[in-house]
Image (cartoon, rainbow, N blue to C red; front, top):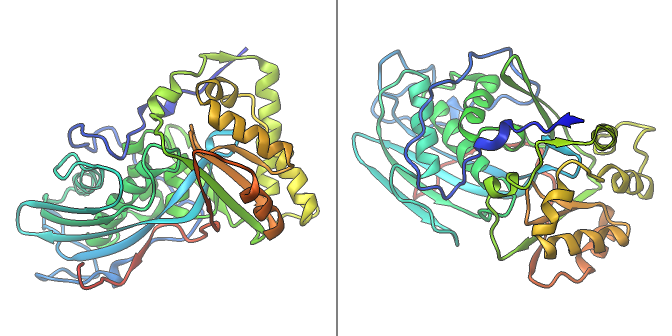
Length: 367
């Protein structure tokens, strides 16, 4: 028997109304991780004397910044708490520092706090604490396009938005490894935050208690299709369905499938092939015995949809802990086939893979 890794049990919901997060217990930084550095100092609009070279110790940062952060699908079947895929669906967040107070302007279907309990605000506060900087006033504008509570990394996107924004406003002091470290400390597990930060397909793990990640850009022929239900699912509740131990044989199958999935979603040849060959590999690679067999019985509509997609030869799995389903179609033909599978009660959203991760944008007139 082998134990299930439960390190992610501290996941934070994007709509949480709990108190502000602190930076206590954040491990020391490590070497930069693979992937682009989100070095946005030159794109920060400076006010009240802020500079592009950083913020002196004890000096309050100042300025404004806007960024896009992608949704993400974790696990992808067998890659429990390790694999993440960034998706072309974005939250658009603008942060302006003020002398005092807090205002939150939110556009989106989900109800979120408009005070210090807002997850972007909590993440900004935790990052300024980590950097040893005074807490400023904040004016936020959040355009939330990522559905909350659907297994699409909404909490990770909010956390990454806050951490990257605060770091950029302070002069980009953390570096990519520091961004991952701080964001993971708030989220509780690194799979979604790694994908949201770096884009592409990410593999995340811990080394001596410190989160690490590497990324690859999947081939352009991989066309994710999301099936998003109207019902929500608590990550904490979904984790409660997992057993403390699973059979060794099931764990062994998952190791092989996760390794195959990483190859099939890379440009590696001849391991992955193209077109139908890659699709067949992905169908096998998305098989899971570690978490879906325990979660799907409580999500019958999602279980039925996964089964019907796979019966049509479409690689499909729960997105994160559900209840959304992600199909990893290969090519436009299979994407169309996935879209054509009846999915009552689900919104069907064809997407691209995001390959950039969180990035700063020019400020608009409302920034």
